[in-house]
Length: 421
Length: 82
Image 1 (cartoon, chains in turn cyan, green):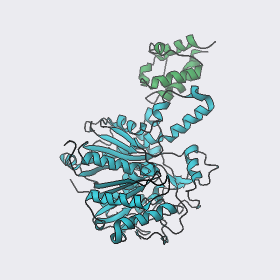
Image 2 (cartoon, one colour):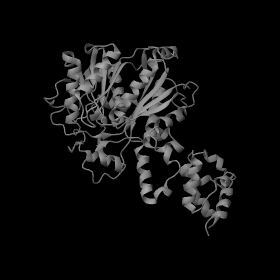
Image 3 (cartoon, chains in turn purple, blue):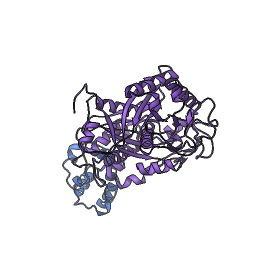
Image 4 (cartoon, helix red, strand yellow):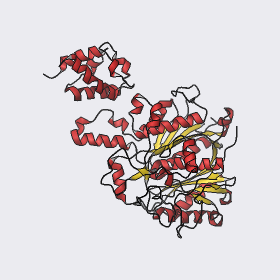
C-alpha cells in the first residue's frame, strides 16, 4: 500500500451477480443479450392485497450448494452478498471454485463496502411479527446484530476472512454506486489496495413490499415482460427486484503484481445531493454529479460510448435524467447510446448501482450494449439517443453509470474497458 | 416427561441456533454439545429457545457444565416446571 495522498489507477478484477436473471455473471449476461427479463409473479410471500404483484424475485436454490448451517439461515441480504462476493473472489483468482473461503490468497487487508437501501428486511419483519405476538420477551438475543444493516458487510468479512474495514452505505437507490465510488477513492488515494464493493437488496416481505406498493410508483401494466418500460412514451412506473452484485476493485499495481486479468477500469466518480426534496429529482444535482464524475476521470463527453441510465421508468426519473444528461454533456451527450437495465432485473434499489455497473463493464468488455426492453416509442420529453430493441455494438471508449436516489443523492461512475494481464 | 420426548424436542431447538446443519436422526445422548458449533452469541439464542420450548429458566453458568446431549437432558429434567 502506498499510503494516503497517493493517486493510483483503479481496476476491476472480479465480478459476481445474483439476480432475477439467475446466479453468475455468464448466466446473467446471456439473458441480457437474449433480451429476456427476469420479471414475473412475486413468490415467497402472500401478495394478496397489493395492487402490483410482479417483480424480480431471486431463486435462492443455487446458493444452497455453497451455503450451509448458520449462513443458510441468515437474512437473504447476507446470503446474496456472500454469494456475489464468492463469485467475485473466484473471478478475480483470489479463491478457488471449491473453496470454503479460507484460501491462503484471500487477502487479510481486503476491505468490503456494501450499499443497501433497506437493510436486512426479512429479519426485521420476522422480528416485528414475533414482537407483535409475544412482546419483548419473544425476542431472541441475536435480534440486535442480525437486524443491523452492517450485518451484510460483517457476514462477508466473516465468511471470507477479509480483515480490511467492513461497512454498509445506506443512501436508497444510490447506495451501491456510492459504495463503489467510495471504495474507488480508498484505493486511488492509498488507503487500501483492494476493496470488495457491492450492492444488495432483498425486501420481498409483506411489510416492505407492501409500503412500496402503496407509494404509487409501481407499474400496473398486466404483462410482466412489458410492464417496465424505461424512457418509453407508454411507461407506467417501475417494478421492484431483489439481488446482489459484487465488484472486486484493486490498485492497478496490486493487480499487475499478481497477474490478474482485468474486467475493466474505474476512472472517475462524482456525487452530489439535490438539497431540495426527499423524493423529487433535480436536474441541477444530477448534472453536477455527472460533470464531477467526468472531471474526476479526466474525460470529456466525447470519450463516452455508452450510458447505463438510472432509468426507473417513472415519469419523474426518466424525463429529469434525460435533461440532466443533456445539461451536463451538451451536444456530444445527445449522440451517446443510453441503455436501462431495470426492465431485466426490476428496480433493485440499493443493489441497482452494483448490478448495473456490472452490466456497464460487460457492455464495454463485449463491446455490446444490451437492448432496451420495451422501448417502442421514446417519450418525446426524453431527448437522447437510446439503444434500440436489439443489442447494439459499441465503439471502444468509456461508459457512464448513473444512480439517483430518494433523499436527493446522486452518484455517477465512469468505467473503462479492461486489458489482458 | 420422558427423556426420549426431551431428546426429540431438543432437535428442533438446536437446529435453529447451531452453527452447523444438524442431522438429528444420528444424534444420541452421547453426542457432544460442542459438535453443534455454538459460539458466545448463538448459545444465548440456544438458552432463549430452550426456555421458550420447555418453560424453563436456564442459568448460563449451569449450561456451560453440560458436555453431552444426555447431560443437557438430565439438566432439563432437574429444572423442568412441575
